[in-house]
Image 1 (spheres, helix red, strand yellow):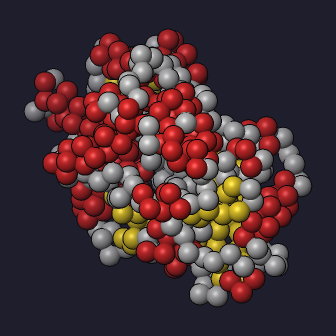
Image 2 (spheres, helix red, strand yellow):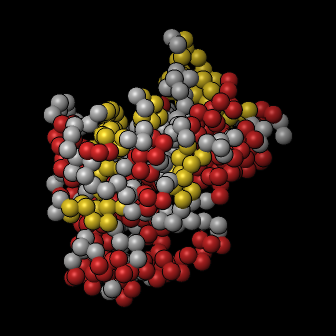
Image 3 (tube, rainbow, N blue to C red):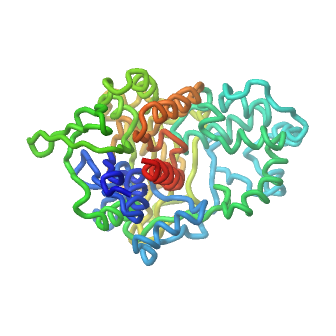
Amino acid sequence: MDPAAKKIIILGAGISGLAAAHWLNKDGFDITILESKSEPGGSMETRREEGFLVDYGPNSGLETVPLIRQLVDEVGLSQELIYADAKSNKRYILRNNQLHALPTNPIAFFRTGLFSLQAKLRLLAEPFIGKSMDGYYQSISTFVRRRLGAEFLDYAINPFVAGVFAGDPDTLSVKSAFPKLYRLEEEYGGLIKGMIKGAKTRKQRSEQSKQSARMFSFKSGMQALPLTIAERLRNRIMYNCHVQTIAKTDGGFRVTFHQDGQEGSMDTPMLLTAIPAYQLALLCPDLDKVMCAHLNEIYYPPVKVLYLGFYKKDVGQPLDGFGFLIPEKEKKKFLGAIWSSVIFPERANPDVAAFTLFLGGARSPELLEQANPKLVDAVVGEFKAIMKVAADPIFVREKLWPKAIPQYTLGYIEHERYFTEVETAHPGFFISGNYRGGISVGDCIKNSELVYLRIRDYAAKR
């Protein structure tokens, strides 16, 4: 193959771009990565301060497929890899200002005070409910209310969606946001039947369900993964590089940019974009205006991460779980809290407890749309009441992500279809990132291999 045929520019040094770059680099591709920030990782951002290890983005990943461990091993991070402490297996939901452990087996389900007797009996009807005729255009709320009932929606799915997407189940598409849940009904006729029968399929594919997959991070935080991949790629990454335009040329694509006050441009036969949708929309109106319209329709709500440290002796709630999520009906100013130092004890000193709280999201973006100096104090007060904390925090850090997580809203399938059409219409142009194929770290890694394989096959045919 002509070496020029294996030249590719990658936009973005988040995990999607870097993981794809890793596979491409292994295969001998000539890679250049353009990154607007001064460091790799995108939303994977870790800082160590005053004895606390703070992840301002993803706090962990789920080892759902062997590919994830393969990537970790290949970049030399095996000794850094850590798994969640067994104490964090328990998850809580807030109801009536009380924390209830989410039941994990049938006996616990019928004993829990989280759901009423009526809701428990309603769940037993799920295997007898037929498939929907709505197809792709169902919200998660509609799907869950029909199959499991309103109370299960309010006190299980509503907080769960807030915890995963910082999202609103009334607006998210079940097909696009939770495709595996949708597929259980489509393939097996129901959720309970699908979970039982689907376990065999997952085993054949060497996959773990997200409920049973091991949770992982790294001794020095989640940013260790993109930092290590980037270090292996070394001078292939151009930092502080702000792309201005993407244009089609006879031989592929031209990318113009400025870096450290200097203007520049590069031509390439192949281009992989792994930057957020709203950033890509600004770069390519000359390439495809309809694509830009689709990109601009993807909603990224604001999310504030609030990291708190307390002395353990001041915390009255037993620290025996992953954390808790808050249903919308509870009317709190935050979405939930991860008990960071329970999941990974190395995140704080032994006598200290560390927590990560999340505010805003699609549920209440208005809280973050304008400065509110009293908001953090109000949230700390609510958190202290729930956790029975008798003193003020000894450590407080916060970070606002103005555009945090892409929302796979109703009709998202139309975006997905059009992005595929664009790649067909513009050979050599590839679209990746967490607005395609899933938002989690694991999804991004899995999709990075898929896009690498598409690039490899395209290059081989040139």
